[in-house]
Picture 1 (cartoon, chains in turn green, cyan):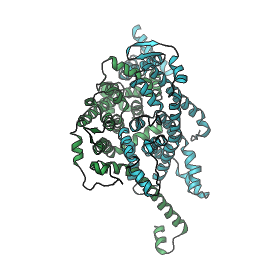
Picture 2: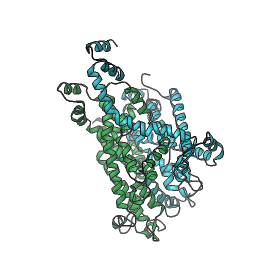
Picture 3: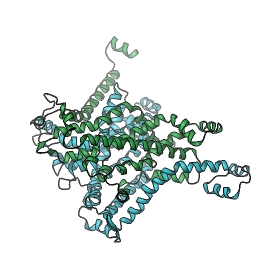
Picture 4: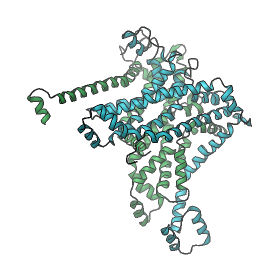
Length: 296
Length: 324
């Protein structure tokens, strides 16, 4: 209030002017950054709506004269099974996320609520797996799946997630279980509930926020995963969106027709689901990152 | 301990078998034993996962490193020859390792420093902070393949908008970016920095900034400290644990760089972006030299473990812990 009256009543004080200038400079920097982060995305969306001559025109044009919305329809009907890639990715993401949520919370429940010999050692080993580069275990895992006859199937991509969901997921869930009051368990136990009942009917409903966090993190990681599908999948019908895009990118011409505008449309289609999900689940996502970062 | 001993006597005199079982699971009473057993049941999926997907593979990969192995057939023990070949007979080994370090050396300061700058800007409680935060974060959400594809187009030497902009501001001979041997490595670094800057690293910094007590800033103001002095003498020291955490993660991430380089350049032009992780991939999954690939993976693991150890070891010199 005093500042407002000051502003109205006469010359601006040097301190206030300094503050205003600071604000302006900060906004200016943020604006430049917004362009830096926003423009590539804007350009990609615009390119996905261009015709081929517009895409390769020189000098480049920013906005297509007539937006070619049909590009999005065409890309689903070309010689590559683009639609199938999306179906495959969605299937794998769902199976991976379900497995991670269910088994990681069970394991975390065990680590947070039970006392038994070897529990702390198990937790230490769990944490130490986060340090080892995936490349070390990748080759033997490939051999294992090869022996099982799982190459060029989706099994190697989601089955492992049903065995505990990985160290990060377990860690995140365990930290959350530790914040829930133990009296809940004890009361239920006295009332005659079994351990699984306590887990499923009492603790899990309280875990909804952290489950949402874990779901979002898992979905993003699984949707973007490239190395796994690249190694295990060989035929285009089995590809996920990531490998499919790469395949499309490497051979952009079908029957001599350039298809870069369609590639851009496919790119946008691969980004949109993840970005939309982030918008709706932003709160949970930010919480989760903060939780893992602060307590890690 | 006293409590535990009483617990054992309260349990009465259970039969011998139960006592043995109790000891085995680290419990005293039948109730505790039962609970411990359930604990094992719920941990079982992960124990199984650890054995199948971690323990087994680690042992196997260590063994493969000393063998010649091409999936079909069985591994043939060849002693140290894979490692000797890596260190002295593989023309791409040292350059790819060096290139990975060059990448990390450029990537880490820009990605972590940039994230810190963004976090400080967003922490000013300006209007529209949520919108800015979301916009900065979106690049991090783009699947790595799409990221590489879209930047390939943006950086296209002739028809790309970036070079058009550069020509527009008077640079008549803009770089060839990903297509040129001299600038490909810098371009891949730039793409990765762009995608990482506003991502998790920034969010973790934001959380760290929220933990800096306002009193310290007030005290600095009273002492006549300006914005820079506050940043230098309050924010930075208080943030060192967070910086440390982010740098450790960035080093791990940087040394494993793979997808953007693989999609955008396939390691080229003329090996300019042939990183160590690409070298492993090509050896193991293109040429199916699983033994040699395993040896290379262990070299990468050793490098990572070494750098993490060095950072933890020397962190005491610069990381400031509250009350520590």
